[in-house]
Amino acid sequence: MKRSKTSKQWMHEHVSDPYVQRAQKEGYRSRAAYKLLEIAERDHLLKPGMVVVDLGATPGGWSQVVAARVGPGGKVIALDLLPLHPLHGVEFIQGDFREDSVLAQLEERLGGRQIGLVISDMAPNISGIGMADQARAMHLAELALDFSVRHLQPGGAFLVKVFQGAGFEDYVKLMRGYFARVVTRKPKASRDRSSELYLLGLERLE
Image 1 (cartoon, rainbow, N blue to C red):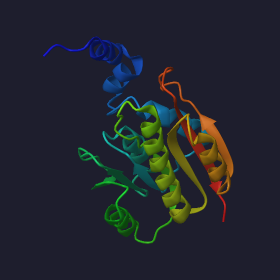
Image 2 (spheres, helix red, strand yellow; image 1 turned 90 degrees about the vertical axis):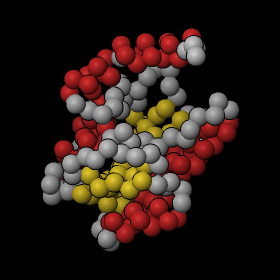
Image 3 (cartoon, helix red, strand yellow; image 1 turned 45 degrees about the vertical axis):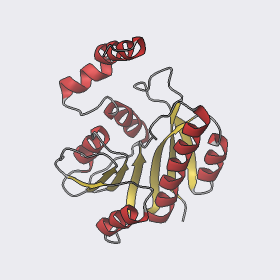
């Protein structure tokens, strides 16, 4: 079967992408690690001993960054629909975050401990139908926010991937009701043509 022109173009861009090359050289599982590294350094998100939940974790680039920063005294729980090759210092749950049974597993792993940071790089499988994809993406972001609001310690933070489009402005307003500050981040490792943005809620209000 012949590869499509678009597929070939994507593969060329991927292989020649400086962040992909850097990730391979430095041992990160994905180029996305550099998105989190940039935001975490700018906003001082990760500290030793923290409890962090990583939603949409596979292949594990973000979890790698987090585990290294929180150290052995911290706790990292990662969750994804797809399997995750084991990572030192990371507890993994495979399942669909939209299902109550999977959410219950995550809450059980927390064992009543409040979270210092929730990070969500979740995105739906793209159908190509813009409105439907955006609606699904915003639904995942809303579920991540709802989880964060219920489990973050006062002063905790929430970082979530969103896409500009329908529901974006309403979602920002919703976040502002729960955090002292909500800021937008577009890391250098985000591809220019992508509509993805990261919203960061700082200082969870009591």
